[in-house]
Figure (cartoon, rainbow, N blue to C red):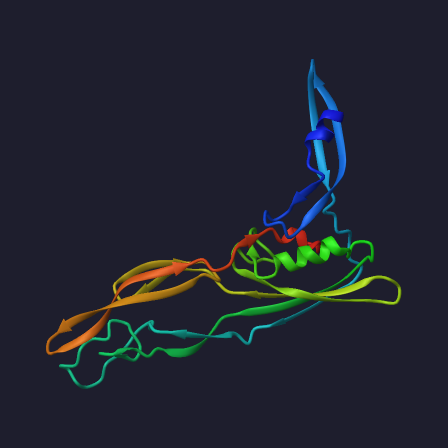
Length: 229
């Protein structure tokens, strides 16, 4: 046991960035064979159980600027160049348009014991803000739920009322832009298109050449929020 205590760090860097350090909680050693021992070091990351839960949601969606369409119909000007799926394409660029996209916002208010909402727990909430779910969460697939942060207040009885804010964006796996596709985009990843100038007839038009999908949020285990899965 003494050797394990000497080797095991006194704190555990929860997210690998030095932001949340969990203190060492317990060191146990059990003999599992001849001269063979099994040692376990646990770190205090328990959150306890909430006593009350209040839920709310909002499906009013969000706004996104897009430069590509799902389909385009052309009327008149048979000699006019094809837009190749681009919206507001001109010889100088692509204007695009702002559209409403599915975004499911929801909040959860939980009551947590006072001894649970300590400085370490507050830093965990801080570190998880701006992360997406590493595993399925509240019925949503992985990478679709974004944790927007939490706000809490302490009651007179010492318990904390904490409101958790989330937003969900769907995964897309069958998107086509012009002749490019199928494109897969996880919920909160960012998609943009590079177009090249192509001569068609007497006109120079923008034609999509490459689609890029960038990951802009890191995944994290939402189990550290300390609320029921």
